[in-house]
Each structure stands twice: as C-alpha cells, then as structure tokens.
Length: 182
Image 1 (cartoon, rainbow, N blue to C red):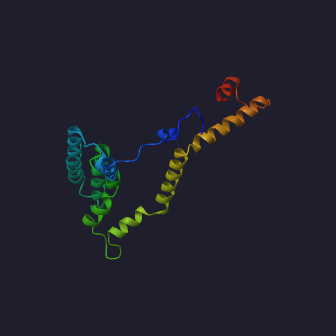
Image 2: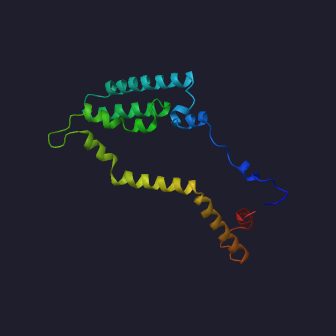
Image 3: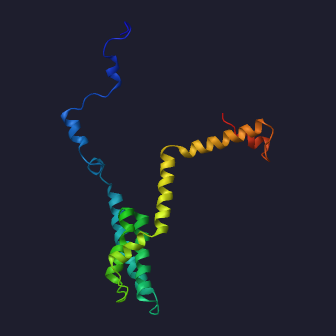
C-alpha cells in the first residue's frame, strides 16, 4: 500500500452495503416504486375510456346500413383504439390487443371460417408483423449500443479520408469541412 493513501480508501468508491430498509424497498416491483398518477392524468384516462366507447358507438350508428357488419365493427374498433392510444387510457400494448377480444365477440364469421381468438391472433403473427418487429428490435439494439453513431462516424471518417486524398466526389469544401471530426 502507498503511504499517501490510507488502507480501505478504495471502499469509498463503492456503495455501502444495503441495510434492511433499502433491501425491502429494492424488492418492490417498478410499478410499486413508481409515483402515483396525478388527478389530471386519471381524469384524462377516464375521459379517454368513456370518450372512446362513445365514439365507437357513434361510428357504429352513423355508418350506412349497406356497410357489412364486419366493416362496422372494424371501424368502431379502430375509433376506440385511436382514442385510447391518444389519451393512453389503457397502456398502449393492451390497447393493441383490443381486436383479440372485440372481433370474436361481435363478428360471427362463417361455418368454414369462424372468427375466434385463434384466427384473429394469427393475424398478429403474420410474416410482415414479425419483419417489422425484427427491424424495430434491431434499431433499438443499434441505439442502445450506439452502433448508429459508430456507423455515422465511420462514414464521416471515410469522407474525411476522401477529402484529404483529393477525391471529394462532388462534395463541396464547406460540406466536407462540416463532415470532418472535430
């Protein structure tokens, strides 16, 4: 040990051992630790729930009788989901699952193709949905690990190398200067 540094100084860089009170608090879920919603947030959410249901009923009754039953249910469901998304009356992932409940309850289907939770849920698992979900997950991972910045810096450093070698490839000097690392 160095004579300038007292023994045990390194321990000051680490957090102290938890006591009984802090251990109990850490065992609570994030939902329990979160602050309660304000009165205005609760009011907005209740207005959103009721407003969405009222708008769905209005859309249902305002549509012409020539419109098929399934299309009317779909339009009413879309309107209630839009209001619930905008007001966050329900959590957004829960709102996205509303058709899983509404369509089997209100659309009859046919004997060959009945509308069930399984048939509606199959639409959530289509190839296109998984393609988008995979792209979004890759984007989140790139953002989490700053890969998007690394790629941008690699491109900028390459452009700087082109500028110094005399091959600007159509990049004006002020634009090339703005792309250089500082």
